[in-house]
Amino acid sequence: MPTPTPKRVALLGATGSIGTQALDVMRAHPTRFAVAALSAQSNAELLITQAREFRPAVVVIGDETKYETVKTALAQQPETEVLAGAGALAEVAARPDSDIVLTAMVGYAGLLPTVAAIRAGKDIALANKETLVVAGQLITELVREHNVKLLPVDSEHSAIFQCLVGEEQNPIEKIILTASGGPFRGRGRAELATVTKAQALKHPNWDMGAKITIDSASLMNKGLEVIEAKWLFGLRDDQIDVVVHPQSIIHSLVQFEDGSLKAQLGLPDMKLPIQYALGYPERLPSDFPRFNFLAYPQFTFEQPDTTTFRNLALAFEAMRRGGNAPCILNAANEVAVAAFLRDEIGFLEMSDLVESCLTKVSYLATPSLDDYVHTDQETRRVAQTLIGHGTKSR
Ligand code: NAD
Ligand code: MG
Image 1: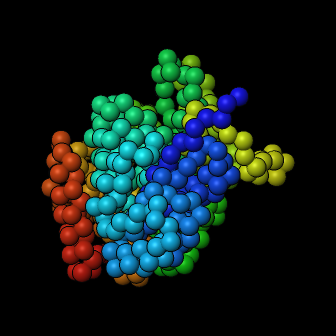
Image 2: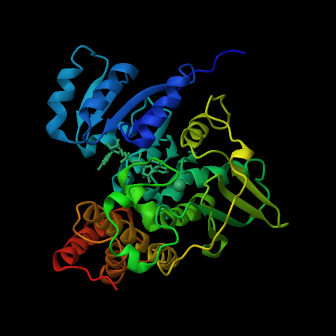
């Protein structure tokens, strides 16, 4: 069989948890993938090491004060252009020398580069769920208009996507997103009031970046994933269920109209969904550890506790309201998580902040891209002011 030409991947957020695992996948398949671009926000050292190994056409360092460091370090590598700043990310995402853009940066910062990439006709391997939370309607319309693929990297969504292969003519009755429950599963509000960031940063099953790890502990991650699923799979709000499955082996399920359930299973390892998105529609061989049923004699399931973990209920509420409500939810949550990580607010106050922002920031039913940008800025301003005045935890 002739060797296919390598897929050219622009990897945004290369130095993070998803980014480094994506490079592991590409390193293992050098004939299938070529790295066209790499970006990092502030870790210049790792970006330089990655650039020396993968020799992309361009690297972007978000923090402009580190431009000279990266430029000097790569002086012996003239084929790699060095750019800096947030604007460069959108420019690089749209360059003609890549086929697919893997969005592995964290947070709202993913929105504009993803829009630029879609408008330039790139397929998107989407790890950056915040983009779909903020502007799902706009993004999915752009994807249709430009006829590109939107391939989920998030493990739950990859599971659903894999279950849907071959089912194009069969409507979904509902999907069931599984949740690990995070490190505080089973705890009550009194205990959560005093948990520390060190405790919240210890996830039982996954090793991830700080923001998503806090989101997993607060169940906001599952809330964001509910909204992400709505847009990825074109679902009504009442077609999305969440069940807690602490073993994180069943990655999610689809229920069809005949009542049949399909699930995708595997050990919790993000390399698998990353590789599936990059290799799609092919399944490439891997040496990832294989699942052994005897090591997991029991799978268990629970109802998520949305009275204790209010973020999940707030996310469902924002999804039902639609418009810019999920954008407000996301921006407030980003500010809340950053403040929690700086020990400025307590664990439960994160939900209070999100709830207050949802009532205080003006609602827009049909936002434009500019409206999302404005809503994000306005929400951050409101959230910062509330933190300054002290949020109160009920
Ligand atoms: P991380 O914090 O480990 O890495 C984030 C990456 O984004 C880094 O390369 C960083 O340099 C870059 N970055 C940070 N701020 C940026 C900014 N303002 N502009 C541009 N780039 C910036 O995060 P992660 O855990 O790899 O998560 C990345 C995304 O993937 C998130 O949206 C997360 O929700 C999603 N995701 C992650 C996992 C996981 O297992 N880590 C699983 C599912 C989904
Ligand atoms: Mg997930």
